[in-house]
Structure formats: structure tokens, C-alpha cells
Length: 502
Image 1 (spheres, rainbow, N blue to C red):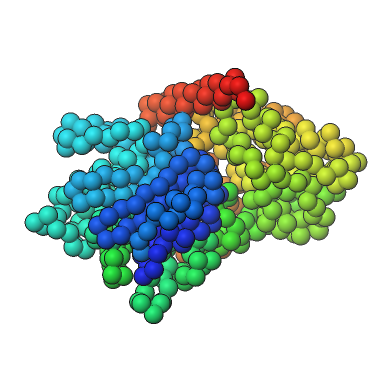
Image 2: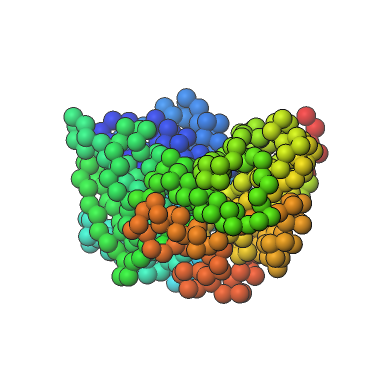
């Protein structure tokens, strides 16, 4: 999961890109980067950390130009953090190309071998995004006429990318001297949206991972980029769009609506907030039929993404809704933190209970999902320590039983708390008196109710069905090894840092 943004304007875009990345910060907190274009010249700055910590005034002054792209990074596919893997990536051949990517290629190793052995292109990092950059560069070279590009050649190159690359990808790129290119994989797994702004100098365009990075910057949402579609905006502001895939179909990632996206976003015509309200309504219907759950005194959300679901659930059941946990917003997401002790410590630092909301009460805790179970177990323990008489736990999504291969760094299947366990056994594992999971069909219906046009979803972490059709047991086994090695390295790095004086 990463955040991408690109702008073609008539005035300097460095501030727009910076502000856009701040609005997408929830999608990636490990690194950030901006590239601006001044005619055929690129200016780049990127580094590790939050957006506000990466860029200083002197860096922003150097990012001149009226077009550019930005990226905030979250590691996927088990990659340990490396500054070399900060994005955007750049390659100077054949035209000068820079690219930011949200998603994950499932055939990146195969492509890397082809690039080296057949196409004589070298990839410097383990990032699938750099592989994607080189595939795009090669396809642009093949599509160019007399070493020149036009929209037809650019769209032909994207069609070539679709034929070679598998997996999930939403991409924004700058082609030196030509303009901004953005495209989405043929399954539409990761989100991408385009907006426009009418100015005295002409129309300006923006593309971004979510709508929350469009309207606050003064642009108006045009539409979502369709699966397989490419958008090309020339440096002069001329807009081009074309479908570049042979058989595109819309299958947005269901976990975007559950957890990843901001609630005020609209993805593929669907209000994330409304979808989460509907999830709470569906959970309320299920709980109303459960005799063992009729003694609840209060509904308490696990902040932040579960709040709409918990609120609607409480309203439907006629129960009190209370904020029982105060969140420290400066602790990283715990399900990708290395080491059990580190994750447990992080949960305690991240959330603090408000004692009066728990003492002598039967509380129903509501969270968006349960992944590894570490967070849930600590939260249940905190509720009991605060004096709760009973602790029930409800998940707005079904059991997460399978790894995600399309851009979300979830644990290995063996580390998922739902793997090989019944709901009663999971409840025992996290220490809850009762555990209620959302049903998968109910979850899909909740999202569809917010946008009747949606039919299919990418829901592999719940049902194990990988929509690209190329995921094998061997692939998942190899991915598990990569993730174990990456987490082991990350944990070793943290321990080494702790040993350093000062």
C-alpha cells in the first residue's frame, strides 16, 4: 500500500505535491519523494520518514517546475526498508522517465530475469516498482516512432505493460519533455482517480490514489481511472485517455473499504464512510440474532477506522456508543512491526483506555479487522484491566486467513490468527468472551449498497481466491520466506540501533 499523486499545472507544483502527499500520508509512512519537471529536466528529492520530516524549505526550493509526481511508501511483499527503494524511481533511457507505483507485481522476478537476459536492462533494487519502470521504459522505446513519442505511441506502450505485467498496479509517471502518464491495472485492484481545475492559464489536472488528495487542493473530481485505462496529460495541459487492456474488469480491493482508505474518500464511486456505516448495520443484524450477545452495555470502537461501523452498530441495536480508547497518532501500524515484544509494546503505547467507560460493564469492542491477533489480544487485556465485566469483540470484516499479494504487507499465513482456528478458538486466543465476525457476503453487500454499480471485488485475504489467476502454492511459499527474512532483518536493525550509544 502506497500513496501516489501527480499534477500538471501552469504554476509551480511543489507545494501541491507536498500537500497531496500529506493528505495521502495514511497510505505510506516509511518514505516519501517528489519529482518535478521543468521541460526536459527533472528535479528529485526523496528520503525515509513522514512527509513533513523528509522535506525542508531548501528541498522545496529546488523542486521547480509546473508538473510533477509524488509518492509516499509503505513496504510490500516483505521488503525491508531501504532508502534505495524510496520512490519515485528514475531511468534516463530512452526518454528520461520517473515513476511512482502503488500495488505489487506478482511476476516481478520473472520480469527481472527477462529484462536482464533479453532486454539488457539492469534493475538495482529488489523493488517491483523499479521492474515496472524498466518494463514501461522498454515498451516506450519499442513504441516510439523515429525516437519521438505521441499519445498513440504512449498508449501502445501501456498496452505492452499490461501484457507483460501481472498483479496490482496504479501508476503515475513523468516522461521528460512530454508530460504525465497515469494508468491502472486491468483488474482495477488499487485505486486511482483524476481531477481537474480551470484556471486563467487553462485546465490543470491531478491524479491521486484517493479523492481526499484532490478536492482539498482546489481540484474537482472528474472520475476514477478505469481498469486498464491510461491517462496522458501533455506539458501544455492537453488531456488524453484510452483503454489499453484487452479484457478489463473492475475488482477493487475490499480491504480498501474496510481499513486502508480514509473514510472521507470516494473510491470507484463508493463512499468509504457510507460503506463502513453499512458494515456496522450488517454486523448489528447478525448480533441481534445472537442470544449470547444480548447483555451488552456499551459499544466501543477501536480507533480510528472502525468508528463508522461501531456507531451504526450501536444505533441499530439501541446501545450506548462511547469512545473508550484514546489513540496516540505517532505510533506505527502494529501488524507489520517486527517481533512479538515490539508489537505488544506498540499497542500499549498506541491506545490508552478511559476507565469509566469499562468499569463493571459488558463491553462490545468493534474493530475493522483482526489480522495477527496481537493488537486485539492487548486491547481485550486493557479492557479487562480497566474493569470490564465481560469483553465481546466484533470485526467489521471476515476472518483474514490468507496472505495478500497485491500491495498490502500482511503476515505469513501461519502468523494469521484465523488460520486453522474456529471463531471460538480465535476468541480464546485473543481472550474475548465472545467473538463476532462479519460474513463475507454481508461485507460485499455493505460496499455494494454504497455503490450499486460495483459487482466484483478482490477479496483474497478473506477467501483465498487470487483474481489474477497466477498465484500458486510455490509463489506463496517463496513470499513467506521473503517476508520472514525481511522482518528478521528489520528486527536485527532495530536491536542494533538500540545498542548504539546516545
